[in-house]
Length: 146
Image (tube, rainbow, N blue to C red; front, top):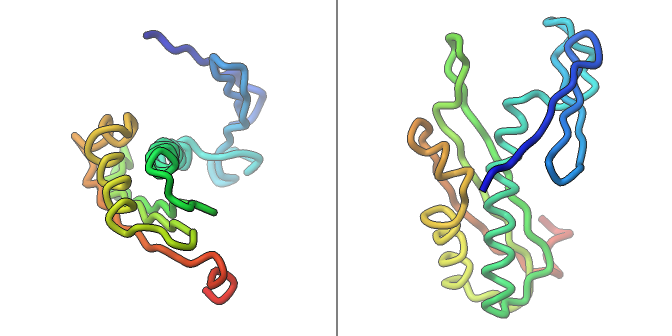
């Protein structure tokens, strides 16, 4: 299956990327490299891609398991090397799963299945990046207290 996207320079260090599905986003550099800080950096998008991919897996798996899921988010942290190219050497995914009556073993299974089998972005990155994960379950009513 082929996928396409296009990236068009709009001046300075700003670009607009358009996906094959017709969605656009602004990509820009930091002011110290000539950007105007009007969009995401490419390496930020890598972290978002990893988090978004695995989030979709986990929500899909938990919904199929009929878990009472109210909210889900993934906090993604990447560590880059100091020398150019400043690639990620470590990425950590912290899943926050919110719902009353969630089965911890089913949440663990969903997170593990995404990490080990389903998340295409993580699979692509893990040959060169150490990827770790953990999760926490929060009760819907207790979320405001967290």
